[in-house]
Length: 86
Image (tube, rainbow, N blue to C red; front, top):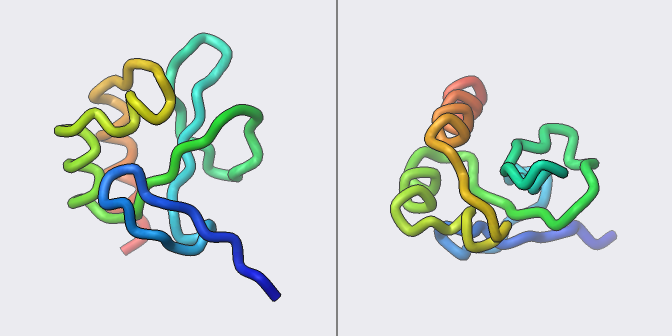
């Protein structure tokens, strides 16, 4: 059985889809976290660690992948998700 893989927008490492956090651009043009990984639209994936989140913030990787502006609040929520998982 084939396991779907996706690439992290920050570190560019491939990992299984379930191990990454999916982000999508909503109808208002804002990036949101897609917890269930079922939202419509183009998705961007990021690893569940703070190093990748900080790298994505510095390089604006999520902004480029989704073609929208991401707020600092999104990065804070991503960090909270990684802290809950550990």
